[in-house]
Image (spheres, rainbow, N blue to C red):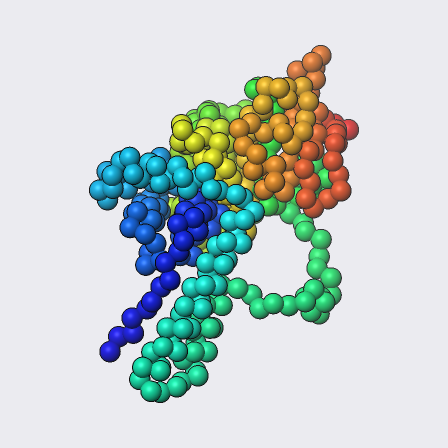
Length: 376
């Protein structure tokens, strides 16, 4: 006889908070079971799963509401009110802890299910209970003291890809790794520098370059100018670079290189598809998604516009329309154009997770239109 699992329904607030965490990209939808949810909560979770299965560009409130109402038959007003109330309860740091509580509770329920089934049959099998505990803890590493983690000595300092054409930037950052965020005013050279980073990374791995600003022809023209119109040289340095004009194919593209670590370039963050009603939240969802890709071993470079009030200066507040980037990025810097020398811009580091270097580190000079060289 099949064992029927029993799930404890979540409280209304906990259900909404967990679903909001999933939509924001803080956790995966697998942390909760449909059986734990209310009828409308199930529709929301099913809508999220539908969007993920179809490689949706993002999981935002508007798209979830559309799927729930138009495909799954939910009442428009009811689903809108429910999703709105989900986000009214969102509180960043608390989400992770509450979802961990949900996960722990689910493990406990599984153990109770196993004990209940064994009592019903009159047979006690401790191995079955142990199996439930093992399965429930599979997503976590065993708890170890900091001392135990040093059994093989101190960990090495984080080191990324050495940028041959940008040695000063390499020394200041520790190399291209993790998540980088670059901001400047329009026309200073964000795209030029990001293309230069892509060419550098192309020496060691695939580059997925999502350019919503210019398009492949413009980018290849710029590479051509960089190499004096030599087609063979351009083909050589771009053999591992893949341009896309939309980020819709991100999941599929990563599956193409499933066994490799990629560089993901996004130009620009503000051109990503978002919900009009929840634009800032939508951009934060994207940043969370890129952060997960970073944790999977990929490197991410995000190009950002600047807030107008930050023109002429550099700070972590300068990244336009999202507050998450300043917390999530490992290395953030701004390019400030010199007023009297338009081909020269100052490099100012505003966030540096792996090195104690912040502030100005020198200048970049634009050479041949579409290449930068460093100047002290």
